[in-house]
Image (tube, rainbow, N blue to C red):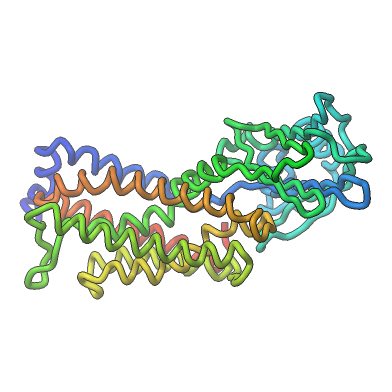
Length: 389
């Protein structure tokens, strides 16, 4: 056993890139708590011009507000209506200070806020309805939003402005917390896709399950099966072809369901989608340990990619957009997902090809790496099925 262990360890000590692989695996192992706890942190702000009045609505996740205010006073893991109601004055002051509106160069006074609660696919949200003191459509409306950013740099606010069917959208972040909507005569609705491109990139980079699913499919791309054993490919071309098929299948599949779900043509509850995504990660990684699909990884990528598309779609579904007002956000978000995915591939494939002939890659990256992914994803599956934190 001791000699066998040394045979595994020496290659990564001898190969400088082995240290990079070791750091990647240690990072995955150390990120178990954050990966399990990670949930997208999004809020939704809508303004609608109706009956000569601007009606507003802000939806903030209760879990995000708890991170700021410590609402869970009895520390039982959930925030009750009583706990939320007790903090209502502080919450209203926080929202009124951190969500502001500037009309034609003048800052509006904070509106009166009426708090309710709502459910977004199983997650509790505090909801504030309000009326802006405007009797007509202004020339410009600037929205500034800085809630939750102090505790979560990945928090995003999705803004929708609807003036008699002309819908404009924006995505606000710590780097860009203000957006100006123009209402000049003849001006077209503003639907900035750049913010949604960034959100797509962040969504896949912080979506640990999506990343690990992709990595599980890519790990054997520089190997092939010979007499029941993994062997390194001799040339780069076969590896690139395998990667191309896998990534293309995954991209095509999740783009299909992302589009269908975003337009509201089909919907699956996250309570169904999220456990299946975790299961897909388990199966993709387990296939590296005991291959069943062999050279047909692209089929796995396509099949489960359809489910991952529903996971991507959650952000856009909540905006409740339709028709042309959805086109640019959808395009921008999908482009961002592909750019984030491409960055992962461009880093992974050259490194994997350089190490493919080492015992380190076959044992530590393929076997230990895949086994680590199986364990992590199995934990996520159980948590998502049982609803435990």
